[in-house]
Image (tube, rainbow, N blue to C red; front, side):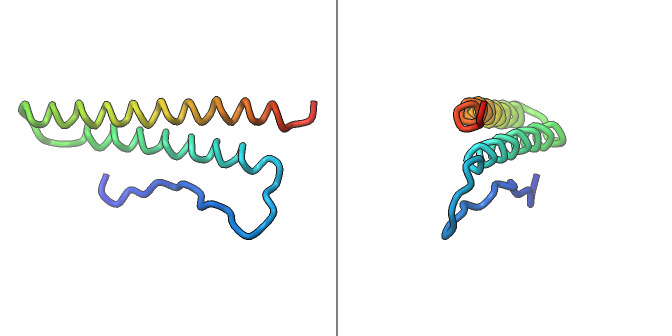
Length: 89
């Protein structure tokens, strides 16, 4: 887990935004959050640490991973709704 960096795209500045860029940005952020959730779960599972403190730590990491996955799902739903609104029919 050490050294893991989320690949969240940088905000775009100083130029005209394409019509579909917000949708693409939401999807990219959703994917990055899902990757973070996977990394958190894998890192916690790989720990060679036992005992009540270890279990409490794993529980908190799992809760954080769940929050990341839930946020990713919300971003993906928002992207789908926005995409339906801006794409020509």
